[in-house]
Image 1 (cartoon, rainbow, N blue to C red):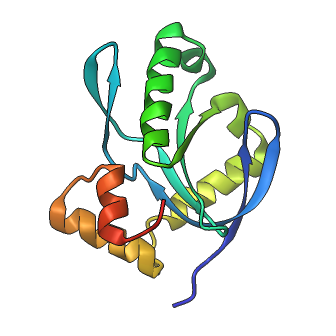
Image 2 (cartoon, rainbow, N blue to C red):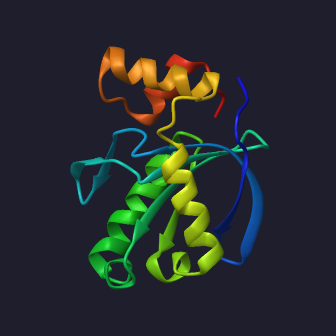
Length: 148
């Protein structure tokens, strides 16, 4: 089965990086985080696999929401929980995706993420979610055998 590979511009804190995207999942997994002693359910917006084998979770927020003190505290708790699983969590602010090439690429990712011609890894993840229901990131990693 032929897998489409897209070029995606993903903003990082220091610069814009151009990497080859291997696969993408929207709302990929449920994860529990702790903030101020309370447990919270968290579902990131995207899980991206790059051609290097690296997995990165992305959260997309409006500029107003991303600048609130409450969100910043919660996001740091989510980032810490992701790091404990060996996965990077990055924030994409609305301002960043208004750049035409990036917005176009994100629309392509979203459109093709639900196609029938999925890679073996994508099919495996979908079958796990279908069989066992919503999964947290650690569980998906364990059940797929994908390395962190």
